[in-house]
Image 1 (cartoon, chains in turn yellow, orange, red, cyan):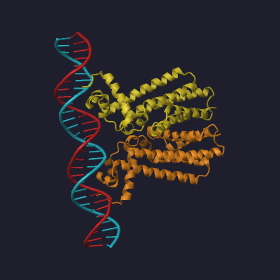
Image 2 (cartoon, protein in one colour; image 1 turned 90 degrees about the vertical axis):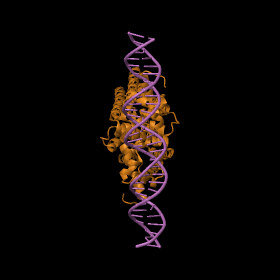
Image 3 (cartoon, rainbow over the protein chains, first blue to last red; image 1 turned 180 degrees about the vertical axis):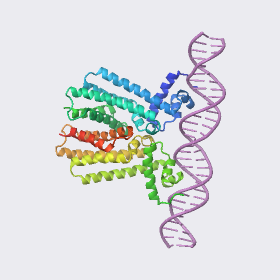
Image 4 (cartoon, rainbow over the protein chains, first blue to last red; image 1 turned 90 degrees about the horizontal axis):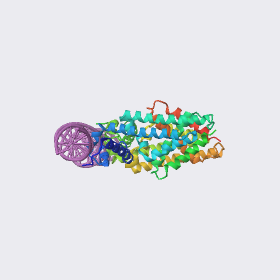
Length: 197
Length: 197
DNA sequence: GATGATAGTTATCAATGGATAACTAAAGGG
DNA sequence: CCCTTTAGTTATCCATTGATAACTATCATC
C-alpha cells in the first residue's frame, strides 16, 4: 500500500509525473499505468483523483498555465526596462522548456490536436497570453525608439515565438546534447540586433 | 476482397495513407487497422508489405525524404539568383507542410523521439540537408553583398528554419483557418528585410 | 489452359489500455 | 477510543492493437 497522501498533494504528484513521463515516453503513449507506477500507487487510484484521462490532461494544462502566467507577471514586474524585459521573457521560455521538455511535444500531441478540445483551447490561451506580453514589451521598445520603423510589433512577436519553438525542436532532435539556454539566447540577441533601429 | 495490386503500388498507397492518417489521428495513435481500412485492405495485409510497423515508418521517411531532396535540387537548379532561390526554398517548405501537415507532428512523435531511432536519424538527415541548402544560398547572398556583415549565415539559416516551424505550429494550433503560404511568406519577406545589408 | 508466384482474406492470439465495482485501511475530529 | 471520511487496493471487464498462421484467389507466363 502506498503511503496515504492528501488528495491535493497526490494530484500534484500525478500531474508532475505526467509531465515527466510525457517527455520520456510521449504524450500520446503515456498510459495511466505508467503514471500510477511512477507515482507509486496502483492504476485505478488515478481515477479516484481524475474522472477520466482527458481530465488529467486538463489539470496538467491548468498547472502549467498557472506557472507560466506567474513567471511572466514576475518578469514584467521585475524588469522595467523594455529590452531587459523582452530578454527575460524569452529566457523564461527557454528555461521552462528546459525544465519540462514535454511541453513542445504536447503542442503536437493528438491528445491536444484531435481528442481533447479543452486542452487545445487551454494551450491556445497560454500562447496568446505570451504573445500579448511580447507585443506589449515590443511596443514599449518602439516607444523608446529602439525598434525599426518598418517592423510591426506583431510580426516581431511571431518571429520571437518561432525562434523559441525552432530552437526547442533543434535541441530535442539533436538529442539535447547542446545547452538550450545559452544557444537560444545567443540567437535571440542576434535577432534583437536585427530588430534594432 | 480488395482489388489486387502490385506490391510496389500497394506500398505507395499504404505510405500515402499513413501520411494522411498521421495528420488526422496523430502519428502515435495511428494503428495498422486504420491504415488498412483507409487503403481498402484488411489489417494483416499490411504486414505482407512491411515486416513491422516500425519498418512502415522508415518507408514513409524514405519517401518523404526523397521527395524533399528532389524539390530542393529542382529549386537550386531553377533559381540561379540567390535571393529568389532562398525564397523558393522557404516557399517549398510551406508548400510541403501544407500538403502534408503530418510532417511537423511526426517531428514530435514518440515513434520518432523514442521508439524508432532509425526514423529519428532519417529525419535529422533531412533537416541537415535543408539547412545545408539554406547556408549555401545565404553564402551566395553574402557574396553579392545582400546580407548584413554581422549576421553569420548559420544563424540566419536557423532563424529561417525556426520561422517555418513556428508558422507551422501557429497554423496548426489555430485550426488551420488562415492560409499558411501567404502568411508564412509575408513573415519571410519581413525577416529577409532584416537580413539585408 | 495449366501452373507457380504472390496479394489478400479469415481466424486467432497475447498483451495492453482505460475504466468500474467492491473492499480495505489510514487519518483525524469529536 | 471510536467512527466517519476517503485514499488506496484487488479483481475484473471490454475494446483495441500488433502480429502470426493457414487458406484463397488472382495474375503472369509458359
